Image (cartoon, rainbow, N blue to C red; front, side, top):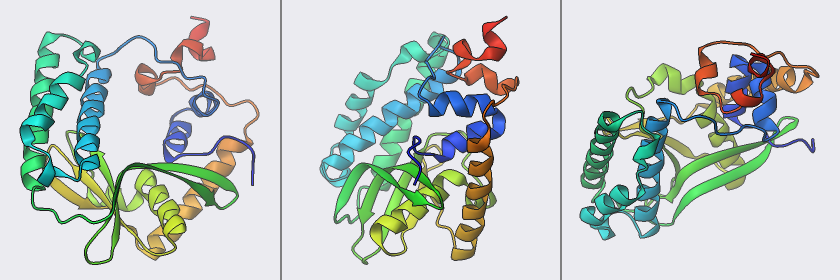
Length: 247
């Protein structure tokens, strides 16, 4: 097993956009630069996730008053990340609505053993991989589910979920840790939908092959090129990227 830093699905997605981005992010050299408009969406997601984490640490919506959840969001949402006051107001209103609706939709959920913010690390093929779940649930029917939150405006389609690297790596690592099949869900918070992201065995096999091929290419490059594109707008390594440092 390699002693290099663990791989993640996000790193492989970065490699597809720009091999240099993959290198800088993997080495931990990415630095948060100038705040841009996209940071408002990230601030919204971070605050919503924090509030749901606290709610589920306390046992879930059934034991956590909705008013407390909304007050948590008001305290934790960082409006400074937004482009202007209008966006700040919109993102704050969106977060409050998401949490109120989620609390109402899941008020009667029957939960058993539950863990929040679960980090997994383990081998897939020749590399060590890492994945993160927003929570793990052992359910009354004996099944185990790993949940990821999405605050994106458009939830992923079934076809996109079938090929999604992040939920796929999560499922592979979770099944390795559990020693049995698990379910993977994406909670699309804006549309109030619970999406099944569980891969069939044949889908996992195809995904493992993709991971193998992309990881081989990504880790073999001694001098990765820096590719300019729209993705540069949101890259936290831009300030030290050779494509930008000489401009």
